[in-house]
Image 1 (cartoon, one colour):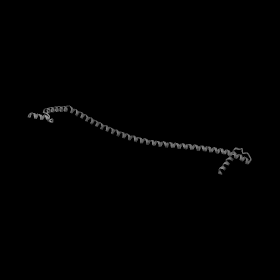
Image 2 (tube, helix red, strand yellow):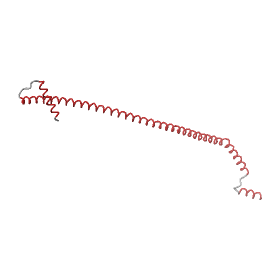
Image 3 (cartoon, one colour):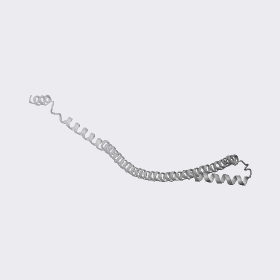
Image 4 (tube, helix red, strand yellow):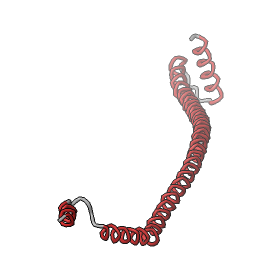
Length: 176
């Protein structure tokens, strides 16, 4: 009975496994460990290394792209600065040319105004001379008529008439 009690006690405690179960479990665990270590772990390490390289390569590409963008930005800034300087120079040249054109037009306008004024003055002087000549002829004929009536004789002689008219006009101009 003592054998039964010890066997029944051992069978009654479910927390203590049998020795055969321990050996089979240890062998299965060892086999599983060896399979995982030889097949699965290298695949994980390989995937991890590839992922690390991809990330590292992506970071290097991003840094290269960043440097290229900075270089492009510097070039753009330099070109923009150069373009602004060139635009300023073009504006200055245009302003100088505009001032020269305005000055040239102003000079031409003054020349044209002087020419028009000279032509107008000459025209006025010619009209004045014509009016004086016409007036002298009219005054001369009136003076001759009047003198003929006053003197009572005809002054038909042209030379005489001219002298009388000139003398009369000279006297008239002196009296002014």
